[in-house]
Image 1 (tube, rainbow, N blue to C red):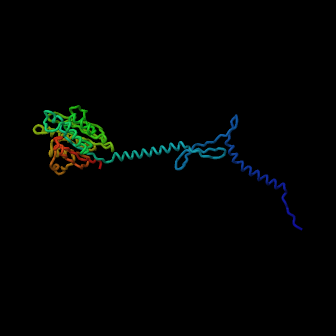
Image 2 (cartoon, one colour):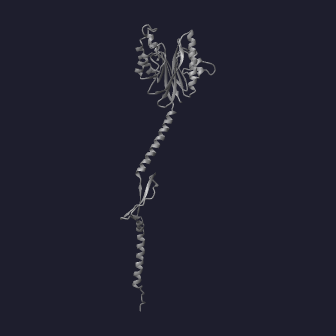
Image 3 (tube, rainbow, N blue to C red):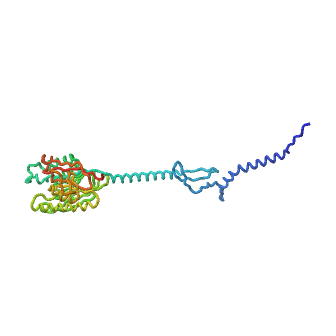
Length: 355
């Protein structure tokens, strides 16, 4: 006879099922209870209030941004502040651009550059006017046009001129577009020794003068401080024209030479290049009395480390010399004399600064 099978009472199974159901219900209701914990009630009617903890820093796609963790119906959602992200990115780009600009400006300020500088006694218009001493030369209007061609031929950025009368200065500026110091700043009668420069290459920082005797009377001689626009570097240009001839004019010329040495020695203490142009009315003596004494260098040669040895012949009375620059491409152009543009040569050379 088969053994009897024991069965749990039906009521016990039902009690176990009800207990499991209750436990499962509790587990399922826990999140709901948490959500309801965030619900507050006013005196009027209940409504959901979103809990918003303090803002925290987040890193999103490599960017540090502000995000806010919000609880919405029991679900945590990160809301990224896109406006803050945009502002932060723009600030970083501006800072990067400013650093690059500062670096480029510093590099430009220290960059070397070269300038072609010339000296030319244009033969003043009074000398070829009726009653002048050079009646066999063309009038100033014709000669100034030829002078403008010389400026272009030599490609000078700076030109120290001598004997340049007001009519010649106006005409030459119109033809070349060059600016001038002092130009007409000292009046119509004192344009003679103006320094002309290309305003697309240089600007004037300051201008001054020193005085020397010239043919029996005091004359101002220009000193101009120029800034190279592309690099910001600065240099001085001194242009001078001492007395010509013998007798008492020799003493005047030597006074002018001594004054020039003093000016150069004062300027070079400022630590920027000094370039000198002029009709010096002297050759070997100018080199030994001025170039050697002021520590200048002539692009056409010469030395004074072991006694004064002027540059080789032929020596003109017209000079470009200087310090703080390396010289090259010296050109003693004799065509102004052969073509009766002037009774002086056109002298030019290249000065490299910052090499």
